[in-house]
Length: 101
Image (cartoon, rainbow, N blue to C red; front, side, top):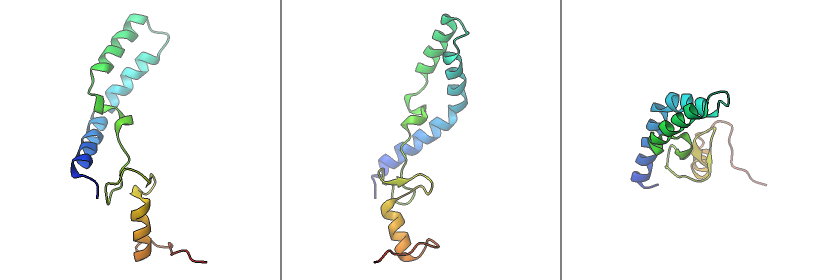
């Protein structure tokens, strides 16, 4: 089990990134638009840099929903490889069986 503080920190980052998603998207479009003047783009860049650092989507860590483990997480399932194996062995995932040869 991961530290509860690390899980809570990641949850706060998720909330912040969802809250500022539209605002960051608009500012990034202004910054990347080469047709606008340099001053407008620079002002948009300054506004973007004043937003909270943790509101960036890149700062969100993919963590296991069951254990909170940060590494070895399958994106599609949102669980770690270890939790997936345990659930498969318990027979809780349909179609998944223990491999033997």
